[in-house]
Image (cartoon, one colour):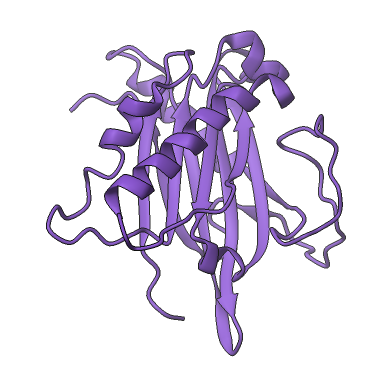
Length: 231
C-alpha cells in the first residue's frame, strides 16, 4: 500500500475536561515546523479521561469529554495545515474504565478502512479499570491493494516510582488478556443506539476461529500511554 503517515500522542486528563485551546495549540508540535505533513491517522491515548464514576458507567456520560478532544483536533488541523483542506472524520472512540483511545482518520483514508476490532482490559486492584488498556485494530486498504493491519493500544499502568514490579505485572496482564473482537466497519450505515456501550459486542458475524490477541495475528503495533516508569 502507499505510505501512511501516523501521528501518536498521549495525555493524562486528570479527570477533568480538556482545555481545547491549550491542547489544540500544542497537538502537532512534534511535526516539522517548516513543512508539517498532515497525519493520515491521528491517535490519542487518554488516561483519567473523566471522574471515576463516569469512566466506569461510560456511554453518554463520557460524550462531552470526547467531544472536546474532537473539537481540539479540528482546531489544530485548521490552524496547522491552513490552506491544505485537511479534515478528520469523526473518530473511533473506545474506553476501558478511565483509559480511552481516539483514532482519527483523514476523510480520504477513512473510506479505505476495511475492518475494526476493539479490546479493553482492567488491571490492578480487582481489575476494576481505574488502570488498564484499551485497543483499536483496523485494516487499511483500497481498490487493488492489500490490507495492512494496525493495532493501537492506550495504556495506564500502576503509579509510584517503587512500584515497577506491579507495572510489569500490569503489562503482563494486558498482553495475556487483551482480546480483540470485530465490530461493524466504519462505513456501516446501520443505526446504533446512543446508549450502546463503547466496548460493544460484535455486530456482525466472523469466520475467525482463533482469538485476535495483542500479538496475533501479526500487525503493526503501537503502544502508548501513561506507563509510569521512571528513567
